Image (cartoon, rainbow, N blue to C red; front, side, top):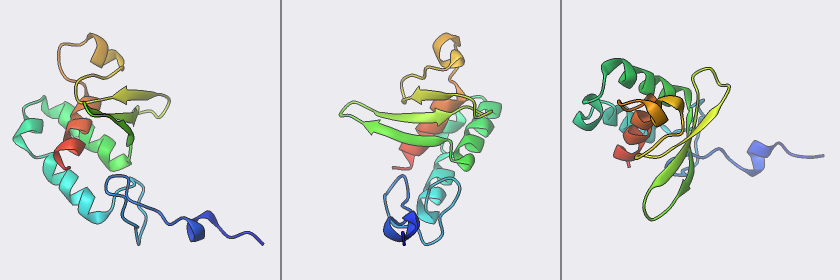
Length: 120
């Protein structure tokens, strides 16, 4: 008889890798979630347009920001679009979404990544 995957591999926080007692939809533990929530109110994040910050917070609450890889220069995240139909590779410096490639203002994906990195 096979055991469920959760019995052999407990759920871990996607930020700090601690074992979660109560797994959540966003993938973060309670302490990391609180740090990220505080980071969304930081001056570095609030300098952007308020409606984009709200959308970035919504992405974070939905668990749409997933760490992909880290290098010496920057960390890359996989950010799921709002409709869930596509994914974007996003770093603090760039995003491959349409707004990130062509727009003058910062996209919501990059704002969400900045909040996650500020919480680190």
